[in-house]
Image (cartoon, rainbow, N blue to C red):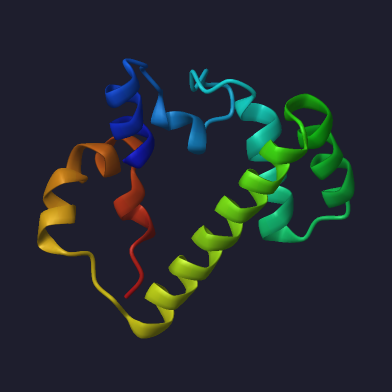
Length: 111
């Protein structure tokens, strides 16, 4: 949702489906290398060092730091929200309904 809003602000169009379908062209420059890094971080996969180096080589040291920080904060926020049982606010549910339907995210609702 934030990527969509950022894109509108910058006059860019992004395809959110990339998050669940890697064959989709997201419109984000170097999206594949960034997503590979994010996935490796989340799974602590054996190729994490290689994926980290791919970000560094493709985008530079500053972008690697930004990507790592973004991954870290998303991991923390999601875990805190899940652990405390914070429900999605009505306003956010309303404005994210189309986005969640496009990605079939409601199939992942925990009970």
